[in-house]
Amino acid sequence: MKTLNSLLLAFFSFILIVSCGGKEEKKKEGFSYEKVIKEEKVDTSKNTNEDVANVVLTADDLMKFNKDEIRVKAGQKVKLTLRHIGKLDINVMGHNVTILKKGVDLVEFATKAAAERDNGYLPKDSEDDIIVHTKLIGGGETTVIEFDAPEVGTYEFLCTFPAHFAMMRGKFIVE
Image: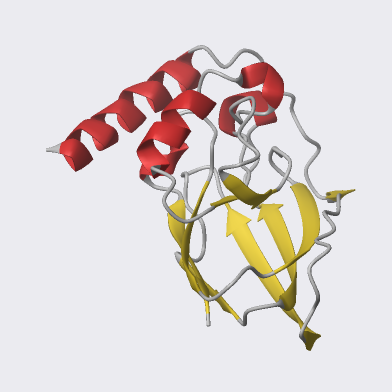
Protein backbone atom coordinates (compact mmCIF):
# COMPACT_ATOMS: atom_id res chain seq x y z
CA MET A 1 0.00 0.00 0.00
CA LYS A 2 2.89 2.35 0.85
CA THR A 3 4.44 1.69 -2.58
CA LEU A 4 1.12 2.37 -4.29
CA ASN A 5 0.79 5.67 -2.42
CA SER A 6 4.35 6.61 -3.42
CA LEU A 7 3.67 5.80 -7.06
CA LEU A 8 0.40 7.77 -7.05
CA LEU A 9 2.17 10.72 -5.43
CA ALA A 10 4.92 10.52 -8.07
CA PHE A 11 2.40 10.33 -10.92
CA PHE A 12 0.32 13.28 -9.79
CA SER A 13 3.40 15.35 -8.97
CA PHE A 14 4.78 14.62 -12.44
CA ILE A 15 1.49 15.71 -14.06
CA LEU A 16 1.49 18.89 -11.96
CA ILE A 17 5.10 19.71 -12.81
CA VAL A 18 4.66 19.09 -16.52
CA SER A 19 1.44 21.11 -16.71
CA CYS A 20 2.96 24.04 -14.79
CA GLY A 21 6.41 23.81 -16.31
CA GLY A 22 6.41 27.10 -18.18
CA LYS A 23 8.18 27.81 -21.42
CA GLU A 24 10.63 25.43 -22.99
CA GLU A 25 13.43 26.82 -25.07
CA LYS A 26 13.61 25.46 -28.56
CA LYS A 27 16.97 23.98 -29.47
CA LYS A 28 18.41 24.03 -32.93
CA GLU A 29 18.51 20.67 -34.62
CA GLY A 30 21.76 19.29 -35.95
CA PHE A 31 24.14 20.74 -33.39
CA SER A 32 24.28 19.97 -29.73
CA TYR A 33 26.76 20.38 -26.97
CA GLU A 34 26.99 19.09 -23.49
CA LYS A 35 27.39 21.47 -20.58
CA VAL A 36 29.64 19.94 -17.92
CA ILE A 37 29.40 21.04 -14.32
CA LYS A 38 32.29 19.77 -12.24
CA GLU A 39 32.15 19.71 -8.50
CA GLU A 40 34.29 17.79 -6.09
CA LYS A 41 33.88 16.62 -2.54
CA VAL A 42 36.99 15.64 -0.68
CA ASP A 43 36.87 12.91 1.91
CA THR A 44 39.70 13.14 4.40
CA SER A 45 39.59 9.41 5.15
CA LYS A 46 42.50 7.36 3.88
CA ASN A 47 42.07 5.95 0.38
CA THR A 48 43.07 2.28 0.66
CA ASN A 49 42.60 1.39 -2.99
CA GLU A 50 44.51 3.31 -5.65
CA ASP A 51 42.24 2.47 -8.60
CA VAL A 52 39.28 4.69 -9.39
CA ALA A 53 35.75 3.41 -9.90
CA ASN A 54 34.35 5.36 -12.85
CA VAL A 55 30.59 5.26 -12.50
CA VAL A 56 28.41 6.81 -15.19
CA LEU A 57 24.69 7.20 -14.56
CA THR A 58 22.34 8.54 -17.17
CA ALA A 59 18.94 10.03 -16.43
CA ASP A 60 16.21 10.85 -18.95
CA ASP A 61 12.92 12.68 -19.40
CA LEU A 62 11.01 9.51 -18.43
CA MET A 63 12.36 9.65 -14.86
CA LYS A 64 14.72 6.70 -15.19
CA PHE A 65 18.33 6.06 -14.25
CA ASN A 66 20.12 3.57 -16.50
CA LYS A 67 21.27 1.62 -13.41
CA ASP A 68 19.58 0.62 -10.21
CA GLU A 69 22.72 -0.85 -8.64
CA ILE A 70 26.27 0.49 -8.30
CA ARG A 71 29.12 -1.61 -6.87
CA VAL A 72 32.43 -0.26 -5.58
CA LYS A 73 35.10 -1.30 -3.07
CA ALA A 74 35.38 0.16 0.41
CA GLY A 75 37.78 3.11 0.49
CA GLN A 76 37.98 3.23 -3.30
CA LYS A 77 38.03 6.61 -5.03
CA VAL A 78 34.74 6.96 -6.92
CA LYS A 79 34.25 9.27 -9.89
CA LEU A 80 30.49 9.57 -10.36
CA THR A 81 29.28 11.16 -13.59
CA LEU A 82 25.60 12.00 -14.03
CA ARG A 83 24.44 12.72 -17.58
CA HIS A 84 20.94 14.02 -18.23
CA ILE A 85 20.26 12.63 -21.71
CA GLY A 86 16.79 14.17 -21.89
CA LYS A 87 15.83 17.54 -23.34
CA LEU A 88 13.57 19.03 -20.68
CA ASP A 89 14.63 22.03 -18.63
CA ILE A 90 15.97 21.73 -15.07
CA ASN A 91 12.77 23.33 -13.69
CA VAL A 92 10.58 20.70 -15.34
CA MET A 93 12.71 17.54 -15.24
CA GLY A 94 15.82 18.22 -13.15
CA HIS A 95 17.86 15.27 -11.89
CA ASN A 96 20.57 14.67 -9.31
CA VAL A 97 22.09 11.72 -7.47
CA THR A 98 22.07 11.66 -3.69
CA ILE A 99 23.61 8.75 -1.76
CA LEU A 100 22.12 8.36 1.70
CA LYS A 101 23.84 7.08 4.82
CA LYS A 102 22.69 3.82 6.41
CA GLY A 103 19.46 4.03 8.35
CA VAL A 104 18.08 7.11 6.60
CA ASP A 105 14.46 6.63 5.54
CA LEU A 106 14.43 7.29 1.77
CA VAL A 107 10.75 8.24 1.51
CA GLU A 108 10.91 10.60 4.49
CA PHE A 109 14.12 12.19 3.15
CA ALA A 110 12.65 12.61 -0.37
CA THR A 111 9.45 14.12 1.04
CA LYS A 112 11.44 16.75 2.94
CA ALA A 113 13.62 17.37 -0.14
CA ALA A 114 10.59 18.07 -2.36
CA ALA A 115 9.88 21.29 -0.48
CA GLU A 116 13.43 22.64 -0.80
CA ARG A 117 13.47 24.10 -4.33
CA ASP A 118 15.82 26.94 -3.38
CA ASN A 119 18.28 24.43 -1.89
CA GLY A 120 18.48 22.20 -4.98
CA TYR A 121 15.85 19.85 -3.54
CA LEU A 122 18.03 18.84 -0.61
CA PRO A 123 16.68 19.25 2.92
CA LYS A 124 18.43 21.96 4.91
CA ASP A 125 20.67 20.56 7.66
CA SER A 126 20.76 17.14 5.96
CA GLU A 127 24.56 16.71 6.04
CA ASP A 128 24.17 13.93 8.62
CA ASP A 129 21.92 11.98 6.24
CA ILE A 130 23.97 12.26 3.03
CA ILE A 131 27.22 10.62 1.98
CA VAL A 132 27.48 12.68 -1.21
CA HIS A 133 25.27 14.35 -3.83
CA THR A 134 25.55 15.91 -7.27
CA LYS A 135 24.11 19.22 -8.36
CA LEU A 136 20.68 19.30 -9.94
CA ILE A 137 21.00 19.36 -13.74
CA GLY A 138 18.66 19.73 -16.71
CA GLY A 139 18.47 18.16 -20.16
CA GLY A 140 21.80 17.95 -21.99
CA GLU A 141 23.88 18.70 -18.89
CA THR A 142 26.49 16.60 -17.09
CA THR A 143 27.92 16.85 -13.59
CA VAL A 144 30.84 14.99 -12.02
CA ILE A 145 31.79 14.41 -8.38
CA GLU A 146 34.63 12.47 -6.79
CA PHE A 147 34.62 10.94 -3.33
CA ASP A 148 35.96 7.99 -1.34
CA ALA A 149 33.58 5.06 -0.94
CA PRO A 150 32.35 4.58 2.64
CA GLU A 151 32.63 1.40 4.71
CA VAL A 152 31.27 -1.94 3.51
CA GLY A 153 27.49 -1.97 3.30
CA THR A 154 24.47 -1.26 1.17
CA TYR A 155 23.36 2.33 0.80
CA GLU A 156 20.48 3.87 -1.16
CA PHE A 157 20.72 6.48 -3.89
CA LEU A 158 17.93 8.58 -5.38
CA CYS A 159 16.99 11.66 -7.36
CA THR A 160 15.56 14.23 -4.95
CA PHE A 161 13.58 16.26 -7.51
CA PRO A 162 9.92 16.17 -6.35
CA ALA A 163 8.38 12.69 -6.71
CA HIS A 164 11.28 11.29 -8.79
CA PHE A 165 12.39 8.98 -5.97
CA ALA A 166 9.48 6.64 -6.74
CA MET A 167 11.20 5.58 -9.98
CA MET A 168 14.72 6.98 -9.73
CA ARG A 169 16.47 5.09 -6.96
CA GLY A 170 18.81 2.20 -6.43
CA LYS A 171 21.42 0.51 -4.27
CA PHE A 172 24.99 1.74 -3.80
CA ILE A 173 26.79 -1.42 -2.71
CA VAL A 174 30.22 -1.17 -1.09
CA GLU A 175 32.10 -4.48 -0.94
